[in-house]
Image (cartoon, rainbow, N blue to C red):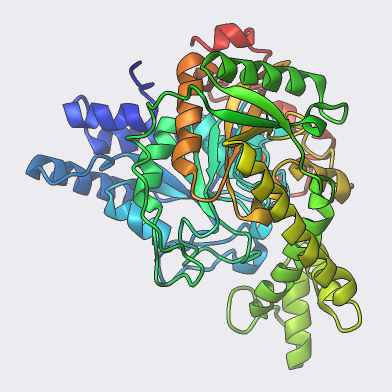
Length: 526
Ligand code: GLN
């Protein structure tokens, strides 16, 4: 077994256990990096520096007393969709820009109990609706591999933070791809667990039958270590699965000889950029070299995944977001003279364009006279898509393919074309429609941009996915590649433009971190 990278969860935990450094030193190092570098990426909305130091000291005390768990003192960042007691929880929206949550999400509570140190809350598309983290009220996130490009979304802040070394691991959520897609675009390992495996209590709802919390980290090993602490039944979430939690860590090393991999032919055709196809094809050959066998499978209804998802998710969001009415939570429009005007103005001013587009589309799909034609039909398609996967998993153990059809696109490029934006999720939404688990792992580069390999597993097969991903990472070094970071420069901080001035990429050049890097192979060895 190779030693874990020093900036990984496993590496930090090992260093803390050996006494190489204290948790407080680790926290201070990450906070200093955030301070120095995050103006380029805009990955954090809120940094909880004081709290982090306090929590780190507590972890150091626990270690001195001999009562520290393995992860005690390892920092984590939380996507700002998870409620954090006493800390601003914005969901990337003006609606909640000053909202301080009254309680911790179960995920936050569990990781705190394991001794992890919270660095802050990461940026996201407004209410997690998006594929580029450009719909955030707090400005877009820039990709550490090329600050003129998107980090993906909606968990773009979590992804950019980990990729830039501003957190070793971050929580994230995936309703239609929001963990795997940014993982692919930022060169990270991102796991979307089976629906119900991780509690949704305290996770602000977007589309309740899809939403699932998970992780973005550097390696499958790091994901396994943290997932073990946050997975499990929660009586406060009515769709939580009451099934035993596997020992993800113990299963990492199992050999994968005999693993049956299914490939979907359409995922290797022309609609997918050549560099992505080549990298993913090569990754599959690595798995074959480890003893896996490959066979073609068919997902008959895969081509209706996007329309089905974009009918159902907005329908659920239109209902979930009705609670934001200017009365009970968040933003309240000033100067109104009637209750109706209060609702209308608060929602008009509090929500951004994409959220409003979804509420409108979703309300329409659910309205009397259209319900059967749209919502009802989409529900039937959802069933057929789930059946496709059920049949596939009778023949194979995992399905492999690209996570996204292209690497990171330019900031601003898809803002005027919602359909082009939605197509970023073409390979990820099926997993959410069927409630399955999937992981994206770094699989090389297209030009100088990272490419992700998606491995999809049957329900509750997280341990197998992490095992396959770990064996792949032992055989490759793509996950060790780091973006070429320039030292903090003066000038306009990237991504914090208040006027939407990133469109066309004009103002992003000031970030100064987009020097062409060394070849991918050389980078892999940094
Ligand atoms: N990009 C998809 C959407 O906008 C998925 C988002 C997500 O997974 N939260 O709905």
